[in-house]
Amino acid sequence: MIEKLNAIRRQAEKEMNKVASYGELNDLRVKYLGKKGELTAVLRGMGSLSPEERPQVGQAANQVRSDIEKILEVRGNELKEQQLQESLKKETIDITLPGQNIFIGRKHPITLVIDQIKEIFLGMGYTISEGPEIELDYYNFEALNIPPEHPARDMQDSFYISDEVLLRTHTSPVQVRTMEKTVPQVPVKIICPGKVYRRDDDATHSPMFHQVEGLVIDKGISMGDLKGTLLTFARQMFGEDRQIRLRPSYFPFTEPSAEVDISCMMCGGEGCRVCSHTGWLEILGSGMVHPRVLEMSGYNPEEVSGFAFGMGVERVALLKYGIDDMRLLFENDLRFLTQF
Ligand code: PHE
Image (cartoon, rainbow, N blue to C red; front, side, top):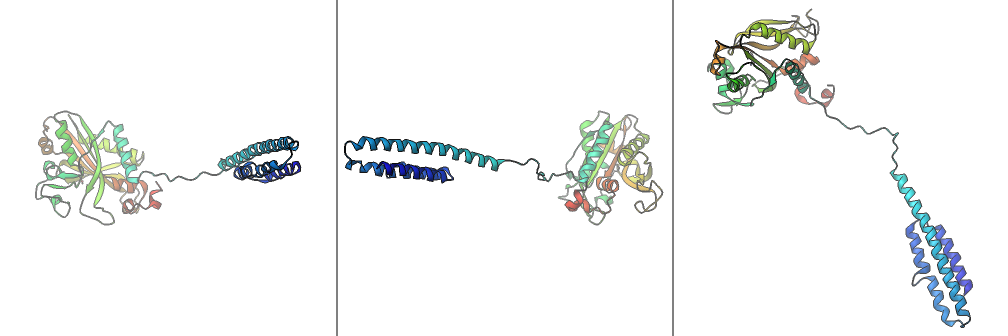
């Protein structure tokens, strides 16, 4: 019987050294030491032993049990350590591998241009003002001295929502809304960026586009102030050697009115395809605020005067970035947008 016990121990040791996981080792614990295990089976046979033999076999069996327990413990620790090492290995990060690219969004060229226009005018002491895109006829036309029969009010140009309400066709209504709030204080120095809507849609027009309005009111404001302001703007926006020129024009809400051209940045004024060989590019409409407009908003045209201008942001973006089709600005093709 002692021989049998020793054989069990040898067999147990051999098998336990072979297992590869903690789970398998536990199976062997049951196989050898469990209630239905091999050692228990041998001990059950002890009844047939003589009283002299019994203590010796009992002792040997206890020895084998504790030997097997020791093997289980040592082997268990080895396996646990091995499993820990393996899981650590799996978690290891190779910090020399190239990183994964994260797609980062960017600003649309229209937003870039508006940001830059704001920056330039903030630098000249202007504040930023905003108004609604859904506007009353009164602010969009009436208070800007646009009489009912004026072509700008034609249903062809404006998106009307009702008799009194429309999508604003320009940012000029913000002039009036601002003056109503500031009157009778001066100076007023604001720019107003925003979306405007007109009923045309072709290669050079979109039914929605952006404008930035400017308004200055103070005592003794003259056309010279307008010209100086726009020259400063043109040079910061398009380069230090830009020139500007004012061409007489007509807007119902300014008198006198002028359209402003800048010397072409492509050819420096020599004449090229971009400027249709004139050397000049039109960038905005402007003028001295009409006395009637000042009056309707509550200012006294005998005491104060002002200038206003309105520029098309898309037009500025096309010129600044040398883009030849305005539709690119609205199609949102990433191959185009990621270039800015
Ligand atoms: N509102 C005019 C337009 O949309 C531009 C403008 C603004 C002209 C301010 C003069 C003064 O064409």
